[in-house]
Length: 225
Image (cartoon, rainbow, N blue to C red; front, side, top):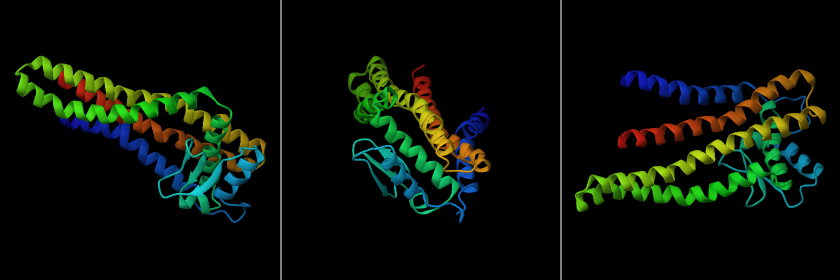
């Protein structure tokens, strides 16, 4: 049964991560026919859409949009390469900046939940550490169940963050980035299929995180049964 569970874990968590990496690598070769890098496209789009106050910078912490600092942060490869992956990812992150600029509810909800989750994650860790200690002190299984139950409820906030994130990521890819690249003429028709694959992978990076959170939550619930 343990081997089956391990194989299932690999199938639903590790394989999607492998597919995302392969997709990014496949379209990550520099293209001399592209007029600019991902960083240059991001800066152009920020100016094109009038996103005043939004910056673009290179980071070593992965591609993302920081709504608190209002900065599109791109990895070195995305920022400095004129590749299909770089261009698509840059457009995806600018898509998040557009969501923020337009005050879209999905991103607003996600940011509110992220702030709550940052606190609830810390309390969840405390509860799970304290539960066995309280059980020994109180000599009551009920104390353990109560503490662990509270910890599980706090972990569920992180699961909710991931679930809310998925439609936000999908919109950044297919509601924002792909139409921008297609309608703005930034890519030729024959490159749109590759861009679509990259954008699908960009949105899919959060699926593995959501699955991990659900598995972790299920594991703790199973321990209480």
